[in-house]
Image 1 (cartoon, rainbow, N blue to C red):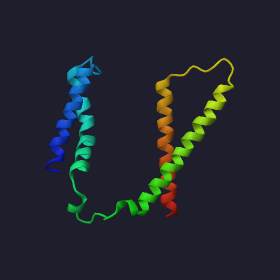
Image 2: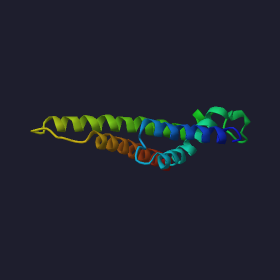
Image 3: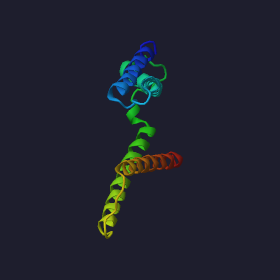
Image 4: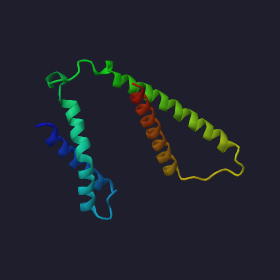
Amino acid sequence: MAIAVPAGVILAGAGGWLSVLVGVTAANPALGFWVFSACLTMPAIALVYVLVVDRDTLEGAVERPDDSIESRWYDRAASGSFMDLVAGLGITLIVLTFVPGGVSVDLDLVLAAVLAACFASFGIRYLVLRRKG
């Protein structure tokens, strides 16, 4: 953590500065910088921690985490949610193809809905697999 926290804070500050430079925070650059930096701090610290820390130095760490039951639940939930995504998008495409006059939708909302559906599908599948044991 002695390396991860300072490096993560610096990385988050760089992300905040990038948001100012790109113009995302044009209305209030100072506030935008601090908000972006605050929101990016924990993910940046976690990223640096994952990249820097060696598993052999952690007490009680599993030798092969990919062989755990949780890893198998994750793999099964991820593959199932991908199939849900493909099937759902395919059915939606077929339905929208036959709608007369076409449908006008905002692409941002569609992508957010697809992402939310993926999260929900994965989460539900993982919880069901965990409950079954």
